[in-house]
Image (cartoon, rainbow, N blue to C red; front, side, top):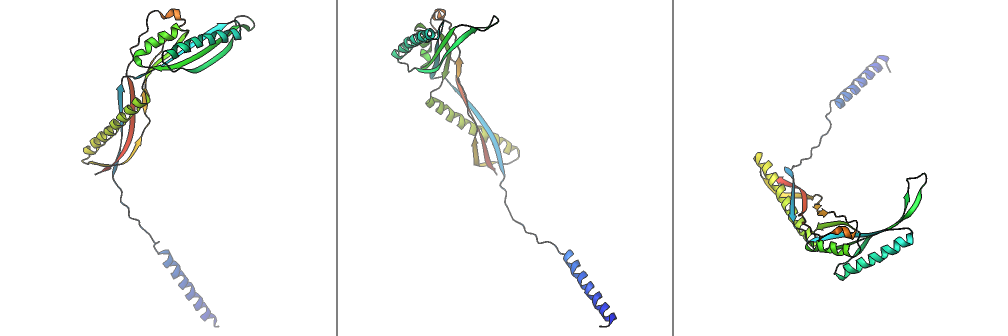
Length: 242
C-alpha cells in the first residue's frame, strides 16, 4: 500500500476514535427517581400521678439473741421465734421467714482477735390491714420480737393495678393536650394516634421505720398515721398532624 494512503487511513481512524470518546464523555448518566409521600407527625410525652390511701401494711420483725455458744444462741432464738410465730398465727397472720443468720462475734480491742460469743438472728414478715398495724407490732413485741425493722404501708396488687390504669389514662390525656397546644401554635390540628409507647411506671409506698431494742422499750400502744401511696405513669404518643 502507498505510504501516503496508509497515513491517511491511520489519521482517519484516530479521528473516528476521538469522536467516539468525546461522545461518551458528553453522555449523561441514567437517573431514576422514586416518588414518596411523607406524613406530617408530632410526638408528645405525657405523665400523670395518682394517690390513694394504703390498703395493706407489711411488717418486718426479728428475734436477735447473743449467747456464749452457737448452740445456746440458736436454741434461745428458736424458742422465741416459735413463741412469736405461734402468737402471730393464732391472731390470723400468715408469717414467713425472710432471713436467718448465726455468726461469731469477736473482740478486736486487744492485740489479737478474741471470740466473745455468738449472735443468732431470725427475721419474719407478715401482712395486715393498715388500721391494725399498731396492734400487730405490739403483739409481736409482747411475744418475743426484739426488733421491728419496718412497717411499710402499701397497696394490694388489685388496688395498684387500678391506680396504674388511672395514671396511664391521665398520661395519655396529658400527651394529647401538649400535642394540641403545640399544633395549635402552628395553626395545625392533631389527628389520630399513630403509635404509643408506655414508659416505666413509678410506685412510692409509705415506709415507716421502727426500732425496738427490747420489748421493755416499747412503752404504750403503737399507733401509725400513714401517708398516701402514689403511682405514676408516662407515655409517648405520635399523632398525625393535620
